[in-house]
Image 1 (tube, one colour):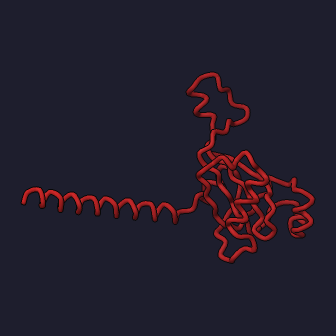
Image 2 (cartoon, helix red, strand yellow):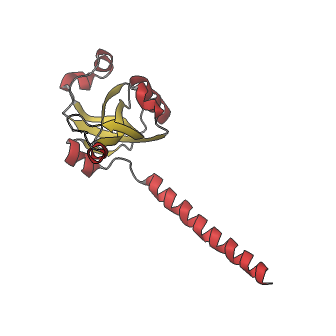
Image 3 (cartoon, one colour):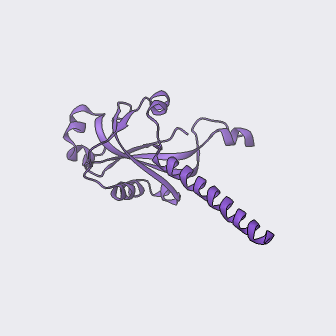
Length: 164
């Protein structure tokens, strides 16, 4: 009888803990990978949620990012989000992208453009200009994520950035 009660108690506890884990992971998945306020503060990039359905699918955006930056494909933790982006800090775009995107060609920068941001996580990327003479400095000078911005209408990878 005691063993039966113990087994029932273990089963109930395991179920409750399991449900808690499922609930926590579901909440995590719904949160955006990149936060608008953090990007604005650290990179002067403005993003907002894209409500419309872009011409390029999430899978196509991932493939475009991997093709443009093949070294990032080693990441097994890839997050994708669709946004409207404005960023004046990058003005060098390929002829292919400029020919496919007249507003980009006209303005010369990303202005209220629908994009996919493909984030490759779990990487070890050294920041430029930081001394890496000690283990502590080496850890502090690494970023662990690279983000590739893909035009959600043309499928062209525009550029990449890292900030964390």
